Image (cartoon, rainbow, N blue to C red; front, side):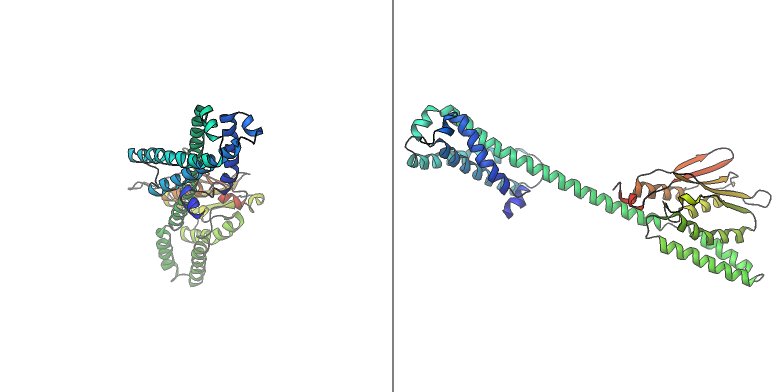
Length: 351
């Protein structure tokens, strides 16, 4: 049976045990009528069983050899000729070999064969076609299923690889800017410099700790965000105001790790920050989304934005939960809405 599993794509024991008796009865009725079943004297049923079994195992072997020789999906003239010639050749061998055997076992066979020659030929063709299409149908069904499973597995592996790449895209400019800020405050306020280094360390520790997580509780994301907000406030001295209005009801739900930090960093990167025109960033929530909104006062940048941060978050949402973020821009504000994930199990629900 190992050959059958390897080349037919399944263990066909059950098919043989069910198929041969069933086909025997059907072809016996087709050839000899109901009398072939009720009248055991003539030996119609045993004759039908012998022929059915012989044809079944012969053409089963042909299918095994066929798939061993041509394991792929590509049809060709060579394949068609192989199966036609093989079936025709072995049909004649079985017909005359088993016919000779049955002649010696059943005296009535010659009379039955002459009386029912056309029906015999038709029933024989039915057996051959039934075996062929049964095995081919099950083979290609299983093959297609295996290919689909493998395709899904490869898609998942690819998605995981993409996700790992995206999660490692932390903006290095943030570190450079933080170090520059540190250099300026060390001479004037060593105590503040120590606090700054501690919060910088906490921020990067959070990034390293969460980068292997696909989703984290919103509460945990907000705690991690505190050290980052401290760094921004220290660096900009009242030029950036961040307001957290996220409701307690959603804090046990889930979000992408470091996503709020990336959105805040984006807002700071692309907007003017000054005492007269402070950048205001508001975090808010409803039952389905967390909203990050900032007043729009774009810098006159000499380079085009890559929008890497937004693309990062959008790709991660699509890969993990098949959700889209919403980006809204008008004259006064820039808004990003992140879907809230109600159950961490949802991270696998679309994959």
